[in-house]
Length: 117
Image 1 (cartoon, rainbow, N blue to C red):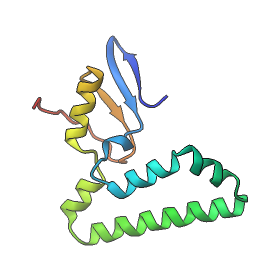
Image 2: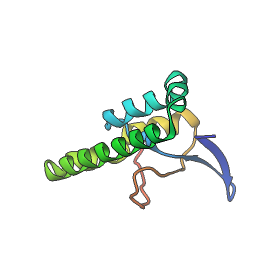
Image 3: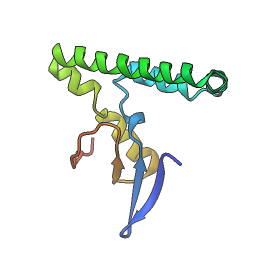
Image 4: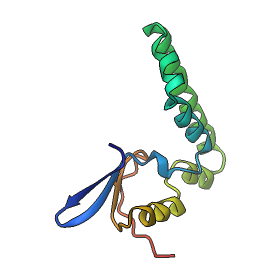
């Protein structure tokens, strides 16, 4: 299940996909909410495979176009929208009572240290 806590060499560590941490990407968060809605899922799966593939291709193309547009414009806005929101990372640490998190989604391999705040 996402997220999940594991024991990593004696240190409780939260593992998660990471998309929930990208709260500044409101367009993605809206898409995420829609696609995880059971009614949407049932309606989507009732469609023919070709229609589902076309929807996925259109969604991917729209996402890539949006990222290209953001990247061409304000680079700092692009960096903000396509990365985790530090405040959400802190809130997640507090929510789970942990101080170590491993996540994906952003496709930016790095190790970050957050200052308590």
